[in-house]
Length: 527
Image 1 (cartoon, rainbow, N blue to C red):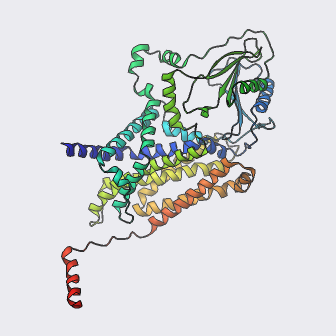
Image 2 (image 1 turned 30 degrees about the horizontal axis):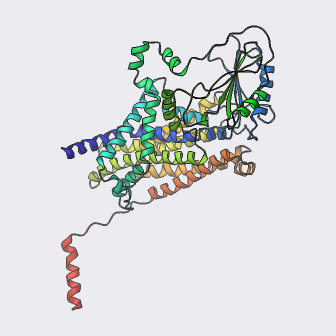
Image 3 (image 1 turned 180 degrees about the vertical axis):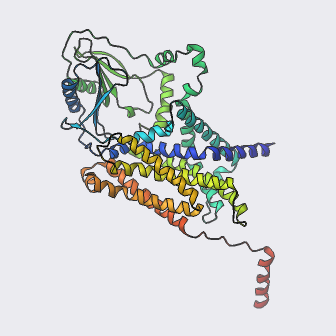
């Protein structure tokens, strides 16, 4: 009975991994890149310079700009620069504008001068693709969440199937074909198993209201907004008094809050009804200030008098627990070292999925090796493996090359970058269809080595933010991207060299009887 249960779990592990593996590979890889979403966006918009951080000075320049250009707006939004995002970003809605009619500007945080960076989604594209798959709402979220559920199923069934999983963690036999792939799959899977369990489960918690809405619908019917208002608190609407009163200095208020709460770091400032008697200013801590993502926290100050109206610095326990799962999944609280650990663990998860797909195909291809042909279904899996892995890697490189090569003033530029991503990915699929499996792998990986390894050179030739400038200026976000791209190029070159070599045939095992004869002969000769 136990053996039958383990075999059933092995069957589920194999087929869930195959059917959803191609999608999970894309979700995991783009999600892993999202841990450096801010750095990718910074690289994608090199027009934004890196300046010394001064929150109060930035607020003073933002207030001056908004009072000159959006004095009659109903609300202001100010995102202060920080170590990972150097831009000072302002936004406002004109009077009578709808929720989507939003004006956004970028300023130099040192001079207050307006900057017009190139139109690019940057890291935001990979972050959104990770859970929306560039599909209409809510279908992409449903599909990615179901894939996360299958990942969790794969992890649990993998633990059940490998009863000696921790012993196998210390076993690796290189040069043994399928055995080496299995050893690597097991070792990587065990090494980062807690991380993968956390990521898979927390992704389900994040969208729990979408995938498990029964209790919400039973209590609130179709008025789901009432549920979220009760959990997170409704956003108060400030009515205009129509009595003009000068707004207090945002820089001075920022200084008071930081002085009253040492160690606090303000990330956002929202001003409702600026220049009116009823003006309210909300100071919001940086997103990564705590592990748990907290909603509605911050300090609210009266804009006319500058007195503190109220402060909310912690969510209720249930909301805090949910925010904890969200924060652990996003990793925004992580410092540089922990963020790199998140990144490598994410790559390990991607590798576990990839090795599983390769093993499934290789095991079945061995049965047809003598005939020299393979069934249609195996060829289909082979093509999808190549396209979903090396093709996707090429598509991501295509996105970055398009970012540097497309005209800066091109209308709809960010959309063309996304088109380049999908276009190159589609070409990877067509190439995999036309070329034999091993050659397709090698050729695509070789091209990926050139594309990724060439990104630092392309950056240096097309902008003033090449490695020689970014390293000298201490711009580690820009330099880190270039150095990571160079490292990826070298890794892809190594893997391509392995694939482009003729496969080494493993020596055939000699029967025991044949082994015994030479030993007996040598014994006779000695005596």
